[in-house]
Image: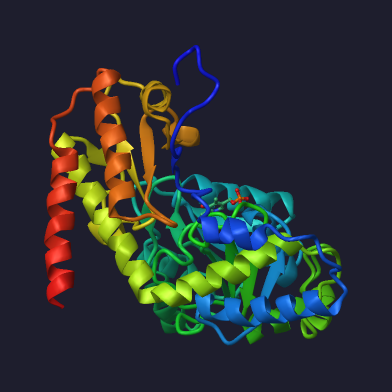
Length: 399
Ligand SMILES: *Cc1c(COP(=O)(O)O)cnc(C)c1O
């Protein structure tokens, strides 16, 4: 923005991996008078969203909705099924897995944390080793982040379920899908997940402020004997009012109007089409990154994320300086490197309500920003993405 202007024209490019841009239709759906959360109109809304959200998680079981960010749903998942001193098995996929582990410690849970280099999703074989060593079944839960938002690596959630089954270990299976739900294929029931944690501000295209626990019967049963203190997060407090469409305390009423609209939009597009769109945008982004001659942080191609791509800066160049220069010049927000990746990585978010041209706009911003910030790279990233989108459009038309 020029120094003599207080307005930036056009749309800000919010290309961070959450929060994501909120579609106009959702903004309009939320632009409603606040209603009585104990009245009949709210009840209709409550019943509708509590029922319809199940399809997004691919579950028939109950989904709890909290007026909280994703961190709250992490805490809800742990406190509802575990007791002080319980052991849990966690995999260090990156910054978010580490935060969940730190939360577990603060809550009085004892995590066994499998370390990694933050360049891969969870490795089933490494989890398997720990489960087989646990002859007395002291591990009460296996916790995995589906899409590690700090690195752009996805963990094989279905394969980890199969591995747990092969060991015969009775541990619960808890999965964080905050940055994968409604962007990357996810199946709560089919993959036998006991608690799925999610949030509103990423694939669901909503503002921050709602989060979710989808729970299996096994998890509900475990909640009956769990001893960690909880009230705000308590499933038990929630489930009876939920059965009538209500909540035990004031829910995020206007966000729920937005959620209602978001679910409709996902269903109209079709979840499989939503996933295919994210796959396409991720592939276009990776082609651009390779054409620039830069390195993708995720080193396991099968674990590439369709929500975001983390890009390594060439040695001697600071990712935050590049991001700031690009924001100043082109009004685009890119994701920062988190904790141990600060300054060495930047992240391109390609999840939520995006289309091929918004992705090309974002990639143009990156390519021009690399030039402005003096980061060594080759030209042609945007051209490579354009070529890929053109090929894809030909195939889609023919199909
Ligand atoms: C964003 C995110 C979180 C944190 O969610 P908040 O809404 O910021 O509390 C946790 N885990 C993952 C994988 C995330 O992407």
